[in-house]
Length: 363
Image 1 (cartoon, rainbow, N blue to C red):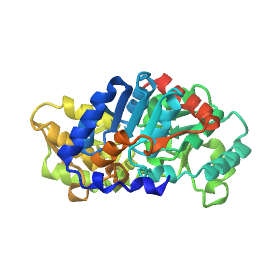
Image 2: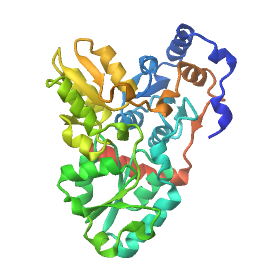
Image 3: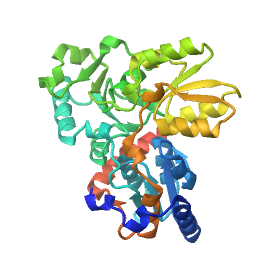
């Protein structure tokens, strides 16, 4: 990504929030339905307020795919999300990532070359057509294309269950990457025995898995994780239950298995939002996910007591937090200089196959 795109002119850096919001609204009024501002649940409150639609990565991909009138899509999220939107939209539609430096450490944990090497190693033991890749949305467009070429599909935390069902109706084994915790928690929910779930370690020959173990495995996991969700520990839940026996613990499935096992409810960011919306007044809810979403839920639902599961140590997704009103305003006012996301056609073709399968299976 061009580094200079992260450097905003002083005009935007020094503008106050009210001025930026006024300018953003003016652009929204000017463009009308030709402009679509998409915001992820982890964005700052003021960014979500300026957006046209808010959702998780699954929901936003679906919205982008079903918005043919939007000639300009300003994506307030991270790079892999904007790539997916570009893949799923028509050639005349332009997708912009409002902050060029907003990436994803988890996606970076699955370099394309290493995934290809692992796939070759796995197929050399198992043979062709025995295993299918399931790529989590948090991957590059290159790896989404790899997934499409090899008969697989993309999933999000919203529809990982449906992805497992789809895959097992067609193949014996799954190669799930890059988030090992979502893969392990989904495998457990699906009923795959623990001894048939293995972790591929790229630092070791053959991933550190002997051939017999690999042949018995039904799920092969990649050694990736979300640094936000691995901050949550079982003791955080224990402390909350001691403090308030009536508390409900809700966590994201990217959390480690021992945290998920102790929670009252587990689901995607959209699930967590719905849980908070549907909880009766007076509910006490401790949430294990990104801090900005929890803060927004607490502000939105003042009739309930909504807290961070990890207290003062609750993590922020620093990449999501990078997007500011100044970034959004700059993108809308200077599209010729802004960070347009363009996935090459040769990648887009196969990536679209995998993403469309994701949308077809639904949640």
